Image (cartoon, rainbow, N blue to C red; front, side):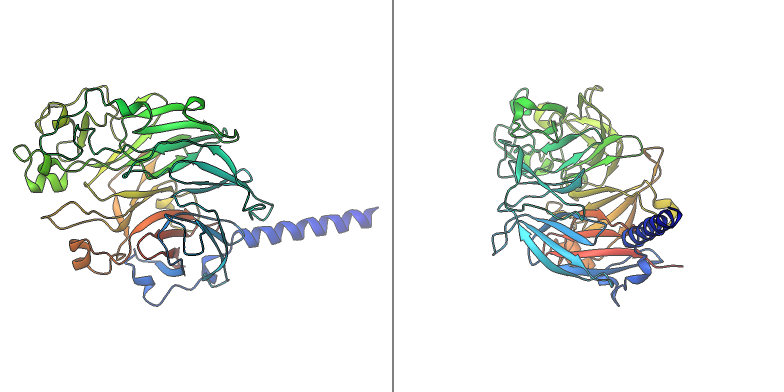
Length: 427
């Protein structure tokens, strides 16, 4: 009896050690590229190109077993919208498989399922104990019939810890004008599309074939949120909004080209049920630190908006297109990064004649679940050069963010499809 018990303890101990080593592979096993994959990073960090997808890689998720699920904006030439890569010990990865007959942005792993979205629907796939999709050709459709237009059509989402899923339904307008982006075009009274767009909808993560009638409009007045994450520290949803465009081209007597290039802020919002962030009736001016009434609804660049609208948790320069948001919970990076937020700025297109900006990943410090201190550029150089940044002709554009089991930070590029991995190498 004692012999059997001893053998059981030895086997159990070996399994625990094996799983721990497997799930927490030290960054020392991974070799940064000689040029750090072309990135500029803080001292002590290195980077490598993990793989080339050959397509517009949007969001991604990394499993403890070393598989990388990458969502493509459009299906590739083989007709696949989700690619699966597997990493070798040195961090480089090879294509393992592909599935999904739809493009989109989001992919998310939680509670035994891989979730993924098209621009109108959300699916889930059962995974086994190795986090491998069991039936890739038979997804369960959990949400369907979501509205999408020619802009802001992507359906990013995040899951909480109570089996709820929160879906971005971006507005197909710039500022809900009678003529979108038109000269002196007024805003449509009340902006009626807010009944089904321009906000975050909450659904159940385990219920099939849900539509708007099954969901809850969790928060409204949000133009478009590609970057979303659930903050485990304070158990709350955070989103990065894409601010409105065309202040000068629509209202040249009110805004100079420089003001239009700088305004409005790209905002980080901490959301609770029932919140209204004010789009399209207002925007946040990060220079004046005020909520400003939109010109389409009677504003002149100075009139303040109704105080009832939600204040941002943090604000960033305009038009840089935040496409990824990730709260860092790993232990590989120095302590200052713990529970802070990484934000991937895809880069601007409408700051001319001012230089374009963005094309980098920034770090926003947090304390007790709230932004604390100034943001800083963490990973730069994706564009290829300062000249390419200024001209808006970036070689690579950061989009999705994911955390590896060992605490590495992964970044996708939705221009050429590169997957990057950033590690801390300083001993």
